[in-house]
Image 1 (tube, one colour):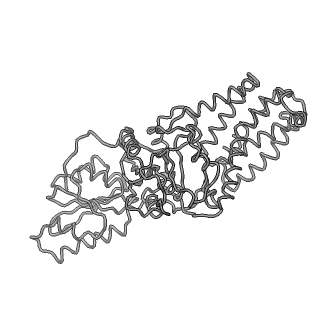
Image 2: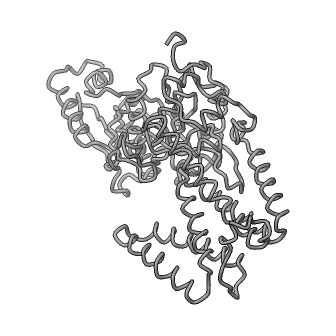
Image 3: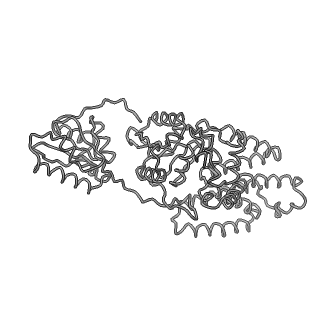
Length: 493
């Protein structure tokens, strides 16, 4: 949890008592990675506490060498604590007053120096978290553009963002969450752009989280923040691209960085935020608009193609005579609706199998499944060929959806529409689509209408959804985030 009600213990003057506390409460001497280095400086005990795997050893050695030189150059009568503080060769040194802070800092990867007879300790940020180097995210690849992406280290992630926005008003407010995990969460926003009320709401909700640990990182934070329940539609947008995160900050959004996660939460978000992709903005406006339209078509196909085709199968008279060829030409003993569900769920099996199959084997597995299983299923009469065709088209449309969370939610919506058509035919298709649209219209994410700018309708913003405008022509920030400064560029530019 963000704040704790447990008693705060002052730092004892005796370093032996501190060591005893670490042995009894923290596991010093039992946990092999928890270390202490004991020094004698001016005939007084000085202890350095650290966690091996989270610290940069070269920094620790350099600091110890500097502290030991005090014995050679300083008199015993000098103020030892101030002398040590002045001789710490590091840019990040912070005094701390309680034993609980000492423990938290050590377990977070910092080194803490305690001096005999002094009730103040010094924490030194020598963290060096294990992790990978920034690289392009697999789920947000672009043909042309930056190849650095967020990683599992919150320090690296904030640095990647600040590298793109060198504004003195960019803020990263950090909060610790989790009684046991003490996970670092950073709330990022630009002070003179972001809505202060939105920032305060997010900070309040995060500080109110009471949980042992956030091992699932950003997803657990999202569930506490939005209380989504069983609504399948994503209420926040995730990104692993630093350029996408920086762009949303400049638009007035608030970002949430969770340590140990490469996915950054963008709030607030709408349905159309999940349909955007960095590739559109790495091409010319005309090409970006074309790519966007193709993507929209893919999303529409993923939602409505199978229910619509199934409706035409049930009621062929709804089809124009020239389109009569699209119905099933072969007869089968298995009802078409069962075939559609089997095909759709079978393709989901293949997707999951590809995810869990080692990369060198996944391509071969996909080819075997697509060619052999599909063809044999048609040959033995399990499926008619048209079912395989339209189910595959709908699945390809699912893959064109930039947001993985939205694509799965759309698949669930498609299956619900299939059930409505199977039960009520044409009225089921009409009523099902109406209820689906009303369901989306009723969703709100942090008090933001999910279908904005379609509902409530904002013509200018909706035009920017349909057409990728050029950067010089996009001068206003989206009004839905209530930015304090509405203009991206000076009025006279």
